[in-house]
Image 1 (tube, one colour):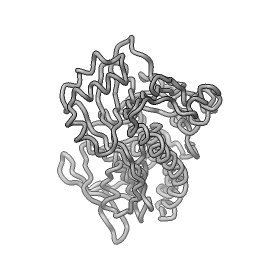
Image 2 (cartoon, rainbow, N blue to C red; image 1 turned 135 degrees about the horizontal axis):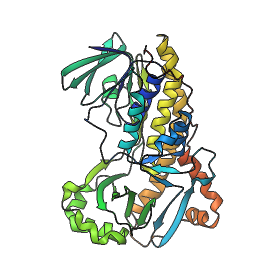
Image 3 (cartoon, one colour; image 1 turned 120 degrees about the horizontal axis):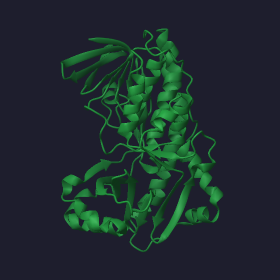
Image 4 (cartoon, rainbow, N blue to C red; image 1 turned 90 degrees about the horizontal axis):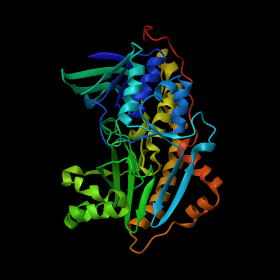
Length: 409
């Protein structure tokens, strides 16, 4: 049995960032990650200006930006024959006026390396949480399968940061409000060449949407499909899917044969949901465990990290003084629920009014008038740039910084 002040379940952006901030504040923290590492293609790659601002506040920005990355100051795309720019980050008031494109495993490994400077930070990999431990009605820890066998981790606070299929929120019996999603995504790779065009938000045509993420030596591609249509697509056959991808990205038409069989294509199930109550005594859920986000805008990572910062700001002091109460956990939800609701409402609107319309369309498409207006009046691009790049109610680091090596509590 291991005793810590805080046990965090899940090694994604929310869990790793919270673990780092609490260890930096002088707390003993265990982060449990069920996989052996962070290397998974389905993780998002966008490091938003608000997150880069946090890195600056932590004194890590210069070192972070030395990692291989790409800087994107505008996001755009193509609908039919019309190209457009939808967001211009160059006018933001943040330290960095761009999105950094970086594989998420590089981001997580960087934060872990910083966290390991503090003796209170402990990362356990291959540690799959199977159940919660209770002391009466209070959550008192977790039980996990590890390479050493079944282990118990006791803590003053358990944080569920284990994603949209959270075991923690399931075992805690927290009620979920499902907002629905009309789409799923087929995830695949195509090789990249130096002559390929630059990064774009997406390529859209009648009934089809393709997003391509530049990972330097290959494209990570997301082909958006109507929810529940995978079996129908498989019946059409892999050559038909290759043809759809080639029509949306003609420059890569000579590479679609790299999709050799259906094992090269992964289904990502899109969800938008949130917990009605993010906490119960001894337990708090944050990130996708509290509110699963659509991939629209790539803002899920941003919200997860903002949740972590707010949680550390509010909970570090009561954890240090061992007087944590349910009212402290409720403060985190009150702080973060408004930006979550607003962002999800915008995502649902885009899904229902735009994505569904595109997926169900059959005729030739052209850019709708708001996108044409952004091309005509570039200052309009600042609005989505603010919403995507900074978000609603951005957080700032307010936790203390103990000297690396100081004894944790």
